[in-house]
Amino acid sequence: MHDQPSEAKWKQLAQQVKSHFEQDYRDASHSYLADRLDKQGKPDFTLRPNQLYALDMVEDAALKRQVIRKTWEELVYPWGVASLDRHDPNFHPYHLAPEHYHKDAAYHRGTIWLWNNGIAMQRMIEAGQVETAYQLFANMNRQALTRGVVGGLSENMDAYPHPSEQWPRLTGATYRPGPTRSNCASGTSIFLASAPIWPTTH
Image (cartoon, rainbow, N blue to C red):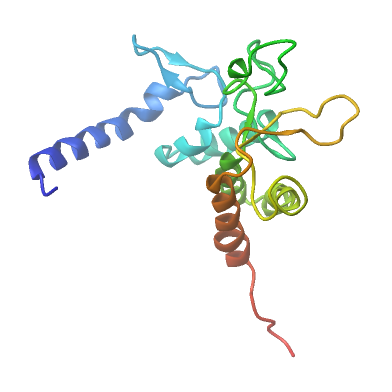
């Protein structure tokens, strides 16, 4: 607290990261950002939801639109955001499939983390696609009202429904405040803020 030398140091490092971000995390052969840099500084272009959070570091409006489109096409399902691109060889569509693999193999390799839905909706709205974002919002409300803990959202879901089932199974913690808070924030600050609350005519 009140450590001005450390504050100045970290602000300088943050500015360096931001000024080099697009140079380090993009290339001409990909329409999206690298997920991370390895220990040699080489970009890893595995497609994950981190894309959506990193866009605040990007100045190029055209690149932002490309990233949003790519992530929604490859990671976003009607019920949530998958943790890995379905085309990746390490993709696991089901969180709990003990007959095929241990659950930890799927935890960050396909399993949906519902708290990522908020940033996915925010980015889609920033791109002018309010109706598309609202479909995800409506499905989150459906889950909160009809599945699992009433009024809340689970931690995870399978990416795919099991055969003969219409919706993916809920997994992870039965109730997590993060996804619920994310959905409420999206509804109040994004959707309601873009529409008049009171009628303009009588």
